[in-house]
Length: 413
Image (cartoon, rainbow, N blue to C red; front, side, top):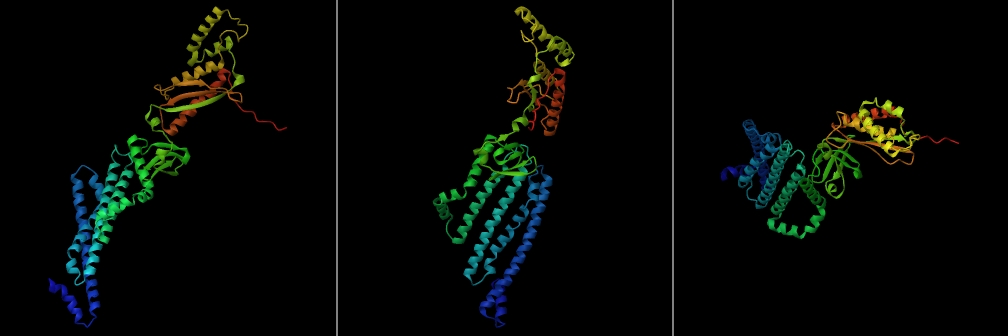
């Protein structure tokens, strides 16, 4: 073996070449040969690993090995064989140069650490892709935890690399890091805050992937598409993307519409502005005509009978409509709106259904607010339903002698 190793040096010495140059020529030729073999070993190793994973994926029901196969794991794992090969041939590779041997061994060990980090990275990425396919993890901040593990792996790897390069024990660097803890906390402040926020978000179930979130401070109003260690990405309804620091979801307020999505309906809360001068007491002839409106016919019968009895007992002077108890067109219309909503097939009967009168505003308008919940929570269907309801209610004003409020424009003098 030793004779074979020095054969090239002896051959070059016979050509009257400088001894120092002979050593470098020998080193470069052997290095090229060994690196070529390493590339072949890497290619063969990748082929073997890929073939093994393909056979394994066909025999197993889980899709984890499928994601491992489609990731960079076969590529990075194939780098392990050349590493051990080069490490084993160092005594044959380099002769009569302890310094170069030390440099090569150090470089190989650093490369080995980096390859190990790459392998762990590919495994974590594979695990992330697999977990996101599971229903129980789809809405969890998986990216945040993967990034934390990656930071930890890189931190350990960098410490080991420094230990290899300096020849000092790993404990020396851990002690130094303890002394520099204040500086490290300052440098990694955002990362630490993001990690803490990710844990709080997951533990308290504040935000999930796919939640509709509104955060007016940052102009965000849309669906959460990514939660990682440093940021939360929200795709707004205009298809723009707002990026918010993860910690701000803990320190600032925001609105999560998940409760609405999981409830029995989506709230409709809009008002019709009634012109106050159009509100009045109803005459008996008008009441008889309104009896033809099916949704309030029974209500009018009960109410008129009750009011007539009370007016007879109190002996009210009914020559003026203001005396005693009377029905108003707005009161009857309000009851009509409630009955209309309660019988509407697309309005939830499990949640509040109400039509309420709000205080009149400074312009002389009386708001009549509809408060109900749509069975269909999908945005487009919800808006269409709301429009249909208010189309009907606005058109119905005519039958009750009511008018919608219109603000008069000031006339130029």
